[in-house]
Length: 104
Image (cartoon, rainbow, N blue to C red; front, side, top):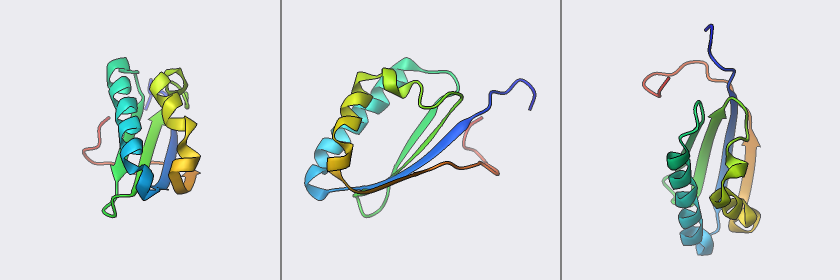
């Protein structure tokens, strides 16, 4: 649509080591709290925790990724030990083909 910003998109999947789960949840919560305070226009960051309790999916959308994430100290702390906290991890771009009730 005219006037809309082009959105970049990322889908990140990962599985956290069981002995690092509490640490991971604390770090992730700090990122989400900081993003809520920042209220960056057009930026969306959704984290899903799968039923196994250790697997996560992050959906990240914004006009200029990775902004605003690098500006957050909490995101720096989250990223600092991510490779060691995770057993597996992958990142892919995606295209939204349709959406109902998921926001504008």
